Length: 176
Image (cartoon, rainbow, N blue to C red):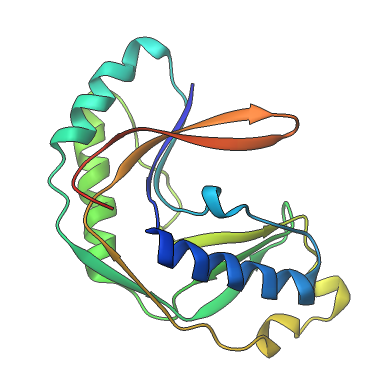
């Protein structure tokens, strides 16, 4: 099972994110992330044997996720996969603390945190090529302003279907 922990947007926020994805798609090309797949990854676990699922569900349901807020105000891209994302120009200590606390809870279950620094973002587009169209295209997009209020995390399974991934929530802590 391919698993990760995420913040999932409420319906209104999901609609705003989907609108930003469509706006970015018009400028950068590529494929917009479907509304139901929009999320902010807190911890990517990768392939996990199904035998470990019960422990992860228990951890998720008991995880003390404090309410918090993350502000997104800039676009960025990862050349690999043609990813265009929405992120923040400023650090968010409460979100960084949530990320760190989650990995601390996962460590006794045999999971190790990634070596790269945490970069909170929401993938808006895949297979885009903004730099090939125009190196400054992301800078010319209208500056996004989005506040994401969260009260819980979700354990999510990524299921491959027809060359794409569908996300299925398995457990949650708090409300989203």
